Image (tube, rainbow, N blue to C red; front, side, top):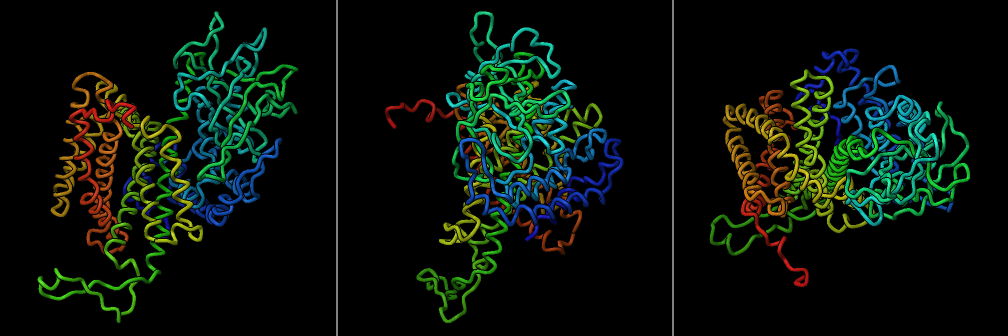
Length: 620
């Protein structure tokens, strides 16, 4: 089964991406140019990524004490991706970009993710460069960002530390001014950094000429002590190799050393590292301390880094989505070809039927896709994967609206993105992981072996609930910040969008029941939001933030599916195409099997159930 028809339907029939060239920034484009980008990315993914997905899983990165070795196929894929122009696809023409809508860029990148997520396709590099284009100086943009967009350099984000994990307020990496005149360096105020960073993806490799680390660190106060909390955090550019003001390598290695590779459950094609900054292994100008250039204002580092973090969160949501769909396609193919069992038959009268269910063993075996429970598992995967893809492309469309819409539309898109980003990251990472588990189940015992790819998809996807903000962090962000910000206006805007879909759907007899179910879900989420905060105590509200996020996410996905279903009926009123029947069936499955779950989740939220919060440690 091909991803392309689903992508094209969502892009053109649902999101109407073909109308984006009406905007000045995209005026040189058309559906033909968008399709050409999709063609190119689909071809590269098919030729350079998909055949080597198992290779990069089994041939893990190797560190010999000096450099990291990756399989040749990773080098080839990296070069092909850079040559495609996708690293700078959304950038201005005058810096070598295509001025491509982010909606189309996200859709095109989906082909690489479904082919081999752990090979990587520039997510962190693009995010790193995009951050510098917003917060960096002209010199930093020219020397670092533009070389990342060209594929000459690659980028990382260095937040976590071994002792701190997700608690950024406990960052202990120090940055001190690099001697007299440190503020006059052409590449920005120059500091020396010392500290350790953990879980740094693509932190060391030989794929590009240089690696540009964006590092969070604290500048000590006059007393030599670090400012507590996140307000004291600053952001620094720390290149692996020193460069001059033209971006050329000087031949000097910066004092950044690989302490070791993390050996992971999945995503084995991407190096994940512990980096030591400033330990003296590679002294610069005879001194220990990694040279770093301040980005933006001192003490405003986290504000800058959130630009990259939010982009990465949507990217992780897309990664989780495509792994879920990869497992769905594999298990669908298996179910269509694996004969096992026979159809259930039985006596015609109820008494005899209650006594026994019989199968005629003389009949030939049927393919497992003919069993109702296998269809249930396939429908669940389809509803999770295609629904998550629609959600992530909708978020990408909001990015374009924020960048090119009028002031009112741009501001609305900004707020909707704020509310939806925790869902776009967390929902696919939970439910597309469940889709991967179901893919293994459909394969039976074979799914638990390495003879089939579904076990790798599950291993690769298990990371996505953790990185770029764990599930619990996303939940606290949603309930603790996003639904409250600007007096709840973002939540109100989302509710208005949902109600607009409900109003359209209720006019269609076949959709009215689903419209009413979605309206009820919206009302329940709204009531639970108020109840959670009714005491005004964050501890009361946030004790059940994850169930709240699960319910909120299911409501959002139900809305997405209902809206997609309306677009399906508009494009194919008679449901003459199997793909249309498939989308409508997946929508019905989600409303019948998934949406009812929100009642249980919201019950503990609304009552501010304290079971977990007050449970004594010694009782475990």
